[in-house]
Image (tube, rainbow, N blue to C red):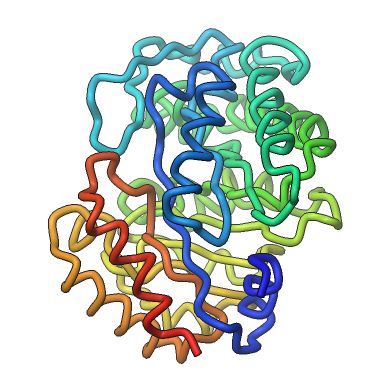
Amino acid sequence: MTKRARLERAISGELPDRVPVALWRHFPMDDQRPPDFVESLLSFQRQYDWDFIKVTPASSYCLADYGAQDEWVGSLEGTYRYTRRVVKRSADWLDLRPLDPSRGVLSTQVTTLRLLKEALSDAETPYVMTIYSPLAQAKNLAGLETLTLHLRSAPERVHTGLNTLTESTLRFIEAIRHTKPSGIFYAAQLADYAHLSKAEYCEFGQPYDLRILEALPNEWWLNILHIHGDSPMVDLFTEYPVQVVNWHDRSSSTSLADGKLKFRGAVCGGIGQWNPLHHGTPTEIRAMAREAIEQTNGRRFILATGCVMPITTPLANIRAVRQAVEANGR
């Protein structure tokens, strides 16, 4: 069975030949040049043969052309630390303008996807591009504390900025269409009770999420929603037009089984990104994978982590995730 056929069967609720599986990780510093980035993505894929590739650029890729700056200081998640924020005063939201995806850092991501498409000339392996929600981009432009202050004290100015970021994102999506990704991995951040109220996310997050997701090309069949955080507002996302939903199921109160009752399509997760994937043993990982497969009956399910894999994860633990679905295949 091809990877696409396996994923499509899982999404539709049919029983595939085995449960689909994928892990994804950042590649700090390698992600700064398209040829290096593509080789890192392909090397990871060749080693483990995942059912799809998630392209994982630094979160600043959509903001660097505004002047945002970051650096990698050794985060085990492979993420960068912001060293320069663009938005400091509420009036700064009014100065943002839609970016041109044919120029600057955005254009390097278009090049990355083009090179990846050329390298995957057989079209056997689906790949999805990471798209950060406008609210997540706003958080990275201003910092969480400043964004929270502004959306409560100058909401109209923040809305102006979010509209600009949404337009930039839609332009980028159109620019990558010719590289023929299978869809996007849409990272919705701040829909977390630890950061915002439900009313705040409904005002500042959801309308912009839906503008983007409803504009995706019809041929993109593998659009994955990632709800970030340990206290996610899961019920806000039940009608989002995506095929797969991924969240921190092992550290939040919403289990995979609960998610299957709330969402259409497939749920994606089952393995804790830190425990047991990073800190545990292959035996613990295989046991957690079996429990996840039993919890979902192996239908409408993709085995993965609830968030990005730590870059120092032991190789034996990564292999254990990949082997777990073979052991449960028919």
